[in-house]
Length: 145
Image (cartoon, rainbow, N blue to C red; front, side, top):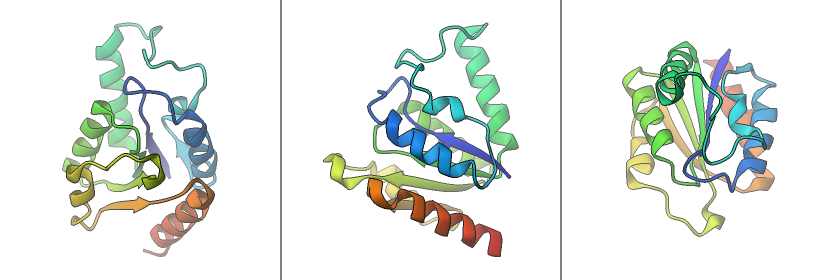
């Protein structure tokens, strides 16, 4: 199974430790095409070393998004890029799981929260302590279908 993980890069790297936990768990279920999102070395400036800059990043990520079987997004830290990826994923009729931590004090975008009216799109509030069990339940339910 190809998994596309979304997390904030240019929108802020405050949650990189949580991204690492999520990616480690996702690797139990398949190949994480975007594991670099969880790298400590990736700054909020993104991938400066990519040839052709933003165009190359966009084209590569859209290719990975098309290749993916499921998208998992940690959406606590607002990110324009993540919103774009999630919109594209919905247009491609991909399965999407968005994870949001209410304890952050932030409020999740109504556009993301309400998108869960689509049966392929789920939004799940979570705490750091239960993220692994939430992912386990989600992927178990995918495997049953």
